Figure 1 (cartoon, rainbow, N blue to C red):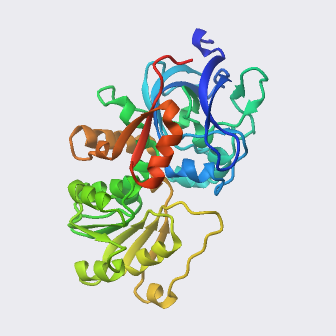
Figure 2 (tube, rainbow, N blue to C red; figure 1 turned 180 degrees about the horizontal axis):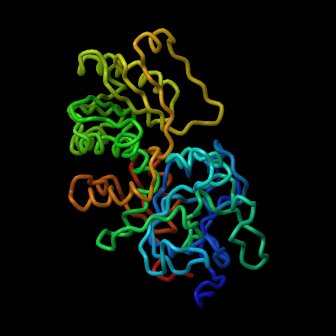
Figure 3 (tube, rainbow, N blue to C red; figure 1 turned 45 degrees about the vertical axis):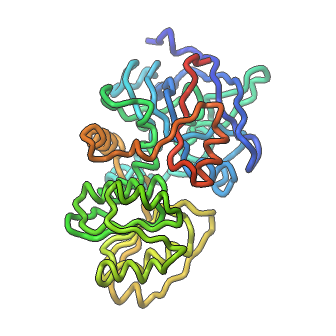
Amino acid sequence: MSQPNAQPLQIKVAVLREAGAPLQIENATLGAPAPNEVRVRVVATGVCHTDMVVRDQLFPTPLPIILGHEGSGVIEAVGSAVTTVAPGDHVVMTYMSCGLCLPCETGHPAHCSHMHPLNFGGGRIDGSTSSCSCGDEHPIHDHFFGQSSFSTYAMANERNVVKVSKEAPLELLGPLGCGIQTGAGSVLNALNVEAGSSFVAFGAGAVGLAAVMAARVAGATTIIAVDVTPSRLELALKLGATHVINSREEDPVQRVHAITGGGANYSLECSGRAEVLRQAIDSITILGTCGIVGATKMGTEVSFNINDVMIPGKRIMGIVQGDVVANAFIPKLVDLYLQGRFPFDKLCHFYQFDEINQAMADSESGITIKPILRMPATQA
């Protein structure tokens, strides 16, 4: 049965029309949900490094496109086949997966065989979109990470919305769908950092600091943050780091080995820089594991000493979204936050929707660790 509020409606969106250009706030029309889709009134959305990587087309997507992939909001309409969520539910939107390929079926949807077309293809898997410009009705590419949340309303799939407690502050929760989930999930799920171990995060942005907080939750006893910004290193100490290293002032590999007495059990490369990945690999100990989450330009390569990896049995692991099943993992992060054990709010600063380009600039300059855009109270 169709719902009265499931009809097309007028929305405001931030559109990328040219590589590297500022995003433009425009009016658009959003269609009705497909049978397996939900329409979400976006309350707020995080700004992620990946949004800027795509803005600059280091990860190519079709243009024009509505970016944004850390949205939180309230479901207002659902398609006829949706069974797990309903209008009125508070949700966090996360990455999209197909649910049918081998990685999805074996509990690794973040490594879905269709990850690129579903998250970077600019539409649904069949190429269709939900959004079009007002006036000329030209289609605008959307479904970025299955949501395109730089918008007052977003069209998502039942698979990539996560119902969350109404006790939690909804406007704060969007970053749990990507950046915070990636850092925390890498530690608690992919790397499976255990109590008493040593861990080092290379890069103390949102992902790296989420990893630091998660390492504390996991019970790691030596937690090291590496960065070049003193204020971020100071915050890392407040969030659970036992040591910090300014890599502009000292060799991080030598310092990690000195702190740990031979290398860390786990390292996580969060900066997206090839030379830093080499440091993350060199900083781990015998049978240590280095995880890679930093987004780099397509085709980026890195060199390392093969014998220094092979002989000590080091492991190098690529990680997407913390390799988590978001429906199970995000509610756990919400619970940890409500208990005061995962204070990711200390990374966040709010901006109004029309300040989106300033939010991106502040993120790139290091002024803000995790920008969150508040959507206007009037939703059209």
